[in-house]
Image (cartoon, rainbow, N blue to C red; front, side, top):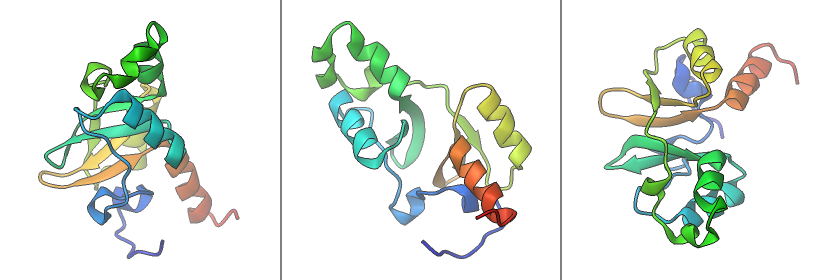
Length: 136
């Protein structure tokens, strides 16, 4: 999708929340809902959103740990398995900040005081760098 270039990290978010394109779950959605969205949209993690704010993330590992002992847990709410360790960065942060977050095993949630813009993953940064250096 073509959108205006903002010159900050919002340009790296592939599915913007403020544009209605982000794939998310709520804390009270079921683990089955999270799994279906991951599968449908071919993503490995989802931001958990409450009142338009990121409160956590749930990824494939969280889901696997939750259901591995008892597949009936697919009906449990997301809040029972989500990781509340969320790394939020402001849109004006630099790529080095993202690399530090990734090095520690997290994804980056881009937000400012009142707006959540979306998630930046490693592949988003790789895609950005390919475009930046025109390596089609």
